[in-house]
Image (cartoon, rainbow, N blue to C red):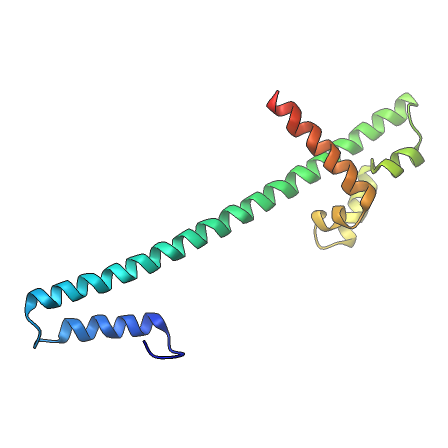
Amino acid sequence: MVRGGDPLTELRRQIEATAQNTTLPRAERIGKLRLLRERLNDALGTAERYLDDAVKEQEAQFSAQMDAELAARENADAREELLRQGVATEEQLDSWGYYSHERLDELAERHASFADAISSDAALKGAVANASGLAHRSSRS
């Protein structure tokens, strides 16, 4: 392989050179071409595994972000009910990370994503983690 060169270009060059080398017996040419194809297939398999891993990581991250946003929104609904029942004050709920929908919207607008908004606020992060953990445990029961 050419140092610093494109490995795919080099492999293509080897394939073409082998295919066009009429001084080699046909059986030897076929064998060399099969070996080159095998190298290419191995490289494709490696790329496919890395691609699959990256896609799975992206999907897991997106799912976690959606779960976190859902938990924060459910906490906002719970906040409204706790306030309505007089069980807790706004200050208590704020300190626990049970923010109103309006505050969640404001946080989301100030950050690049809802996930960034959650990670920037310790109380919200804790409340979401607790809510997500409870939801996860109850879904396994």
